[in-house]
Structure formats: structure tokens, C-alpha cells
Image (cartoon, rainbow, N blue to C red):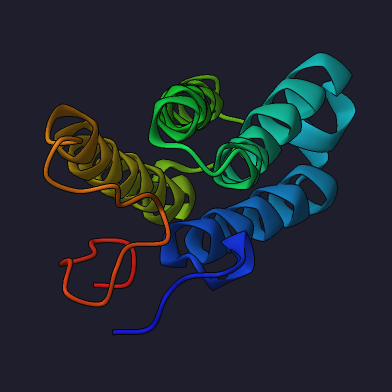
Length: 145
């Protein structure tokens, strides 16, 4: 198993970036969303916050800080989902158009939660291992799974 050296190698960061691109395109191309500046700004900031916090937590190179920033990231994934549900409820966007984005946000939140659990386990077992986001090759790594 390869050691992760940069946050750009993290699958959850890649998925977060993909979701951000889709949300940014929706915010600019959808007439109702693009005209509601407050809503547009909120959903764009929330979706970008997911990958920003993954990257920031990774750069600290210690599990406790990584977990903290991953929690922020997971919260932002929930915020994006809430914004998408709101957009459907006020008829900014048809429900069938936002449902794939809602599903992506759910999946991303679940994957971030899995990484948090993995890192918490490493923190709790620190006496037996010193693994971080850059685990030793013998450590199972949900980041790349």
C-alpha cells in the first residue's frame, strides 16, 4: 500500500472537489440560484469548505488536528445537503436534478465519518502505533479503499 504524501491523493478530497465543481456550476447556470446571492454564496462556501478542511487537517500531520478538521468537513457536507434540500423545496431546482448531488453529499459525509473513526482508533491505540494520515504500509487505510 502506498503512503499518502499529499492531500491531493486522498480519495475523499477528490470527491469533495468533484462535488464543489458540480455545485459551482449549478450555482452559476441555474437562473433562480444565481439570482439569490445569499443562497448562492452560502452553498458555494459550504461546498468548498469540505475540501478545504480535508486539506487543512491533512497538513497538520497529526491525528487530533486532522480529526478536528474532518469534523468541520463532515459538518459542511451536511450543510450542502441542507442547502440542496432547500433549493428543491423552494423550487429553485427540480428534486430529480439535485438528488444526485444530495447522494454525493451523503456519501462524502459517510466517507469522512469513516476516516474520523479510523483516525480516532489510531489515537486511542497510540501506544501500539503512531500512524497518521500517512499510515505504515501494514495498516489498513480507508482513505484509499
